[in-house]
Image (cartoon, rainbow, N blue to C red; front, side, top):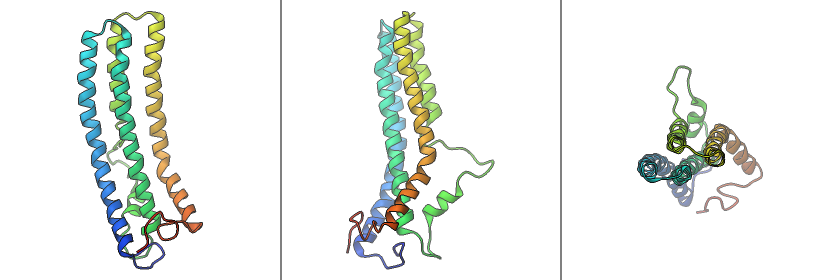
Length: 196
């Protein structure tokens, strides 16, 4: 393996590359675990709250937990993508070498292929609705309906904005890392990586 400029990697740069590839793997796994375990916890809390709550405002606690789970999933996804673009710009680039990040970005989603949502958007939106139903069943006053419904609507907006942002992230991060490389900032020159 060599750096993007073709020079052999120092032992520290090789260690950085190896650690960053491991970071991608570990954060990708953690994202799915945070989602799965978090959703089970949210479901238990939502069911308990729905059974015990005497007011529609009780739906806000599980909504807060659901929002926290989403933010964790989103942060892990953004971090994985950012590390991938860093590797793409600073460690890939020599003809004939394996270029996983380039290939993954260029591959995209072929026509007719299965669509995978790394943010689990549809599940979060359905969970938001399921979280709101018990509050509506309690016969909220108009002010409760506005407050509780507004909080749920804000969560929906957050999920949709994050999804739109995630769709643009790869190209934005790629452009920014290329800009840093062109300015002479990178693994070898700026302290972003370590010298051997």
